[in-house]
Image (tube, rainbow, N blue to C red; front, side):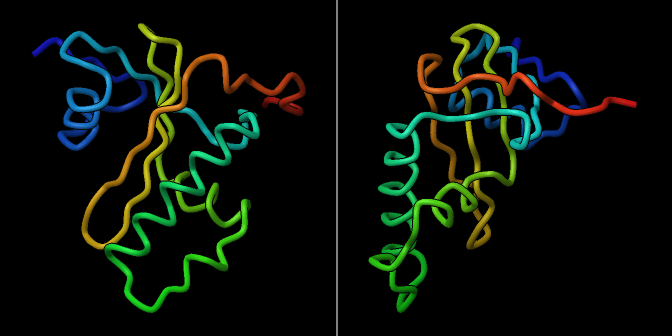
Length: 117
């Protein structure tokens, strides 16, 4: 396996790379606060979060899920795939990791990241 993850390597991250991005993937972990995603991506996250809630969290009322809550659900870990230029957003819930890819044309780095010290 040739998976590489920058900014710390764990077995779980290598597994995410293998499943989500392919054998020769190079993933870089990002802070979600540094990126912006499109409304199309938000809608995809909402559909995915609703599906996870319906299957794994009975009684959670996914029909009341807001866009902000859906996005927050998937920001436990965020990776940039160097090969595809897309993102992989992951949620850790119900003793599992749920990840969803965001294509490169549906996200970008924020231009003003504030003061870096």
